[in-house]
Image (cartoon, rainbow, N blue to C red; front, side, top):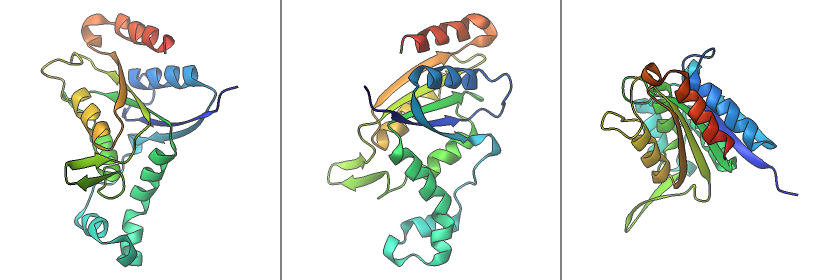
Length: 193
């Protein structure tokens, strides 16, 4: 008998119906079952980092005021979700050659010095080691891994920066040219997981 895994599912598509990246995350989460799943839908958007947030984040934890703790409460919760997860399943469409602003806001909330990474004499070191991440990406015209794909490399880098180096990308890319074949091929890759 295997241990049940903890999955953090993140959907970044603004669309709920008809979203290819959501269809891929559905398929992968079903494939990884049974699992404990925490879902984070970013379509309602997260707040952006503000000056008050930055000051609170750089204040030593023991010296934070109640206001500063409240300022960081959502970020702390998002960080806890990642620490609790064994596997991250991130559905990420490509918008204008990059990631949606909502996904960038999530990254800004979780990439925190002294929380998810720290600096050493040799540079930054991620604190979220031993986790697996799947990036389920969809695009209309951008080919994943091409010179105009500013999303997949960025996401892989950010995850590695916080310590998640085991990253698999499944892409339903160039759907405007490939049509349904793009999604079908991605679903075949997921079936092989």
